[in-house]
Image (cartoon, rainbow, N blue to C red; front, side, top):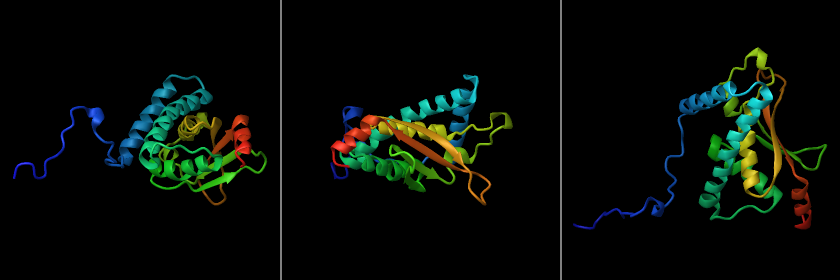
Length: 195
């Protein structure tokens, strides 16, 4: 029975295939690590805008890596080349991998042609955060905005991405909207491609 059920041995860790592995991270572990990231970043800054920028920068690095991983696993190393394709990819595939579900909504801005919004009723990074009164408008969604910006930049769609609270009638907590404002070059390229 030698050789039956034998597992292939790889001489180098780089030769091993990228397996899907376990796709879940304990919610309590994530909440603890994210809380530590916010607390550490808070000790390094003087105001809320700087804190949100640091969280966005941390998210940007995550987004760049998520794009590489998902393009390899899901798309056979192909990337989106169209604006609506990349927005759909972020709204569905990226969101599902990161948060376990598709985002609540993806909308085009009504006032500006270059603006799109991804809305989430209860964004995971804001779920367990209690904001002190002296930090008023602080939004941990800046981390997710950074992830989205990292994915978009890596795919060749430069944009300014910000997170905002939007009050909802009848709800205690406001929903979080990730506002994506694409660079002019993206819109020019899209119009050349016939979009």
